[in-house]
Image 1 (cartoon, rainbow over the protein chains, first blue to last red):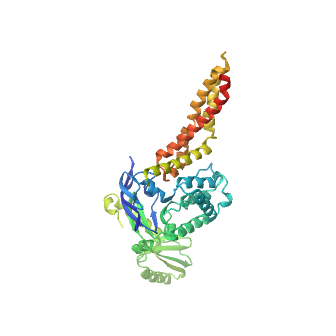
Image 2: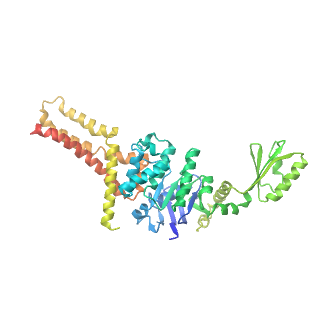
Image 3: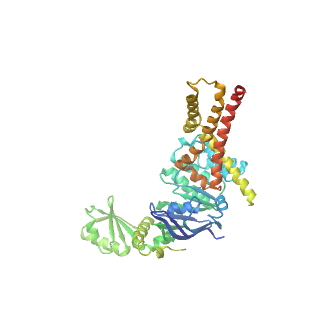
Length: 323
Length: 128
């Protein structure tokens, strides 16, 4: 089986709003699939449909070939879920939380104990396994949620904002673990609005906005498609006072002041560099630093969602793209 | 998986939920108030100022205990778990909503039966 997650015409309507609007996509076995979008785009709703927490108004979702609506038991047995908000039992210890989830996934007692100890050691929680989790920090709760999602060795792992609000060390550990489990063959469905995280971890990214899928592609292809958002960072000595002078230069699309530098957006970096040299010579300025940067995913994301706003009124259906 | 095995596996999960409910909710303040203090005060309202022998009021104690204790756990669990978002965690596990609710009902039933049995054991010799 090539595709392990399939969404066909998935729609979720609430009385006031259509959270997910007829989306189609497939996730291949062994890939890290990013589901990227701004707040309220429909990311979490999609994940909750795929994990069987809520039912779709229409459309179908298949997990490893099982219909999540009709064969929920078989589909849910094979997936691990890390929801957005920490929802461990705070009145139970870390160990008892794991035992409970192990029992719900019917993991034999011996394996349950072995796997729990192994996971708690990986996430540096073993020493505090007997403490009630109400005293745990957000990062520790998040790590425990990951342990709970992995106790039955799932084939697919659904992660909803797994590093949101965490410190750098916890966030890095979680990202390393996601990459490790993926190398071991676990397919990852990563819902996030953290573009850097998606760029680092994902093989493919779906950008969702207003309940519609705007595009699905690899991070690098997305960046290539948006060459017009290439940027040049330049600093002059002595520093120039206003970015308005730079705006008059040919090939400049947009200028942004960042500290003592200027970030200039262009679709022709080669010509722009020549123009900047002329500009500095004419004004007797020294170029202190000059860096050309490819389009970063953040810019691509902003561009896609901005375009999408314009499209969403008249061409909703045609914007949804199937891969 | 056969239907029978599927049922048995879900029932095992139900029992895990019941055990979890027993360890978390039996000592929660709302359960203690509704399950012990409330029936205690209702009993006192019947007992005080009336010239009735204590032994004839013991069946009232048992009935009050059965009614209040068995209905004190269930109404706490679902709102509590919804608010703490632990219900969502359970729903994403391979167990149907009916079996999750059965686990919660079972926890309430066992609490009521347990307390009533304890009271009955002490009351029976006095009732005769």
